[in-house]
Image 1: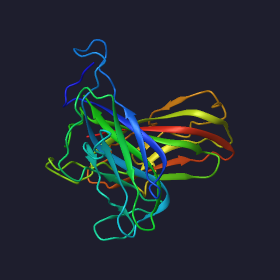
Image 2: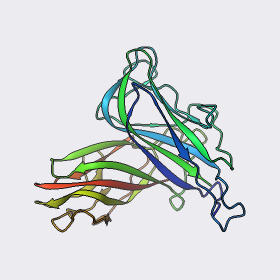
Image 3: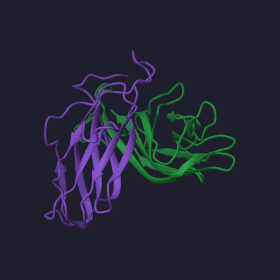
Image 4: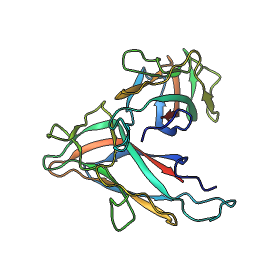
Length: 145
Length: 136
């Protein structure tokens, strides 16, 4: 059934061994309101809570800019969430992501919710720029209501 | 934003193909932080480990018993300890839900990371582990 925005269902999405040195994009189907809802079969509204970088198998490096995670609608890659290009080595202002470390990434700006009625969203793993490396598991957390 | 303990956000964490028979495996998880509209933005949330699911077993467990623990980096089972319950009765095709085995405490606010330790069996045992933590 449809939930209220202050009592959402949080779903976790696991992406194993994402190579931020090459970049990647994945599609996630939006969960639908159930048959006892006022809008059965319609895509729920949602809000990206954040994402976790863990199980780092290769240290992150980007000599020009770091990697990051975005959630979008297929035409605007970061309309619903943008971690910023913060996954890096020791560049000032970025996170030093090495083997054995972990980071939780909030949105870096004016975030908007995922509107109702969608069928899918995109998750983009931005490649770092300039001698890019970095492999890790990513857990994305979205509150659906 | 920060939430009440009775209305937490439930996060699940996936660990694929954990080899309990290959020595102690430990992973670090960054704690989710309160958002910018919270009274404590950027501070680690409080949480409670609800349990761990053992599934997709690809190698039978045998040898010294194994388990799952969550700690703070110095005390490996401070926040959760399944006990060493993964024994030779746990085989391919089975699945188990593991609760804490004793006096469990919540993860306090302000932490930056927690550790998840897969306490080793001496001989064999490979499975996926899903860990569930309620953050508030």
